[in-house]
Amino acid sequence: MTTMERSITVTSSPDRTFDYLSDVGNLPRYMDSMTSAERTGPEEVHVTAVVPDRGTEDGEAWFRTDPSTRRVEWGSEGSSDYHGWLQVDDDPGTGGSRVRLGLHLVRDGADGSLDRTLEALRTQVESGSV
Image (cartoon, rainbow, N blue to C red):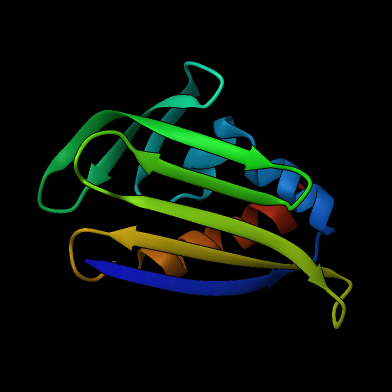
């Protein structure tokens, strides 16, 4: 099992950044290898993703948001124990946001997926898509 954490600074305000990241419909725009996500219940989502060495997979997952702490948490159903989180904080040095991303994976390594996810996140948030 592998646990990884990375962070990135974006120019958008923390509230605006959190609003974008906490919208399930935006997940495929910034989550590396996710191709679709749609809410199926208060904390449930159906997702499709391209999984290395396994192709495209569909599955059920949970997705929780806490606006008071600007935190998003998610994980897959079943025995894989895949889960992660995003935390959006003020970045006083830039006037923007500091976004921390953590992942807990069963397989070793994330083949750069954390860095690709954070760069996609920054591109989406800073491009005015938010």
